[in-house]
Image (cartoon, rainbow, N blue to C red; front, top):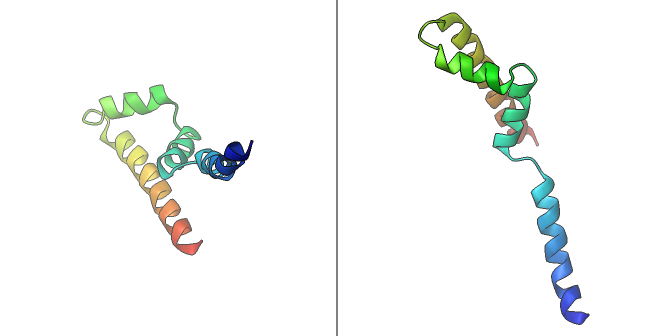
Length: 75
């Protein structure tokens, strides 16, 4: 039992860290509020034939990334 108790704080800390979304997870979650995976793939596939649509998507993703970076520097 003593050995088990030694590892429990480490396990709890690892589990708490694992629950925190990563930077990448946060970006993907925000992208999904506007674009499905299928929509995103279509936009990327058609980036040369529909440059306006791609620019809108690209600007949206960049604004998400910028917002997350600003949030990290504030917190």
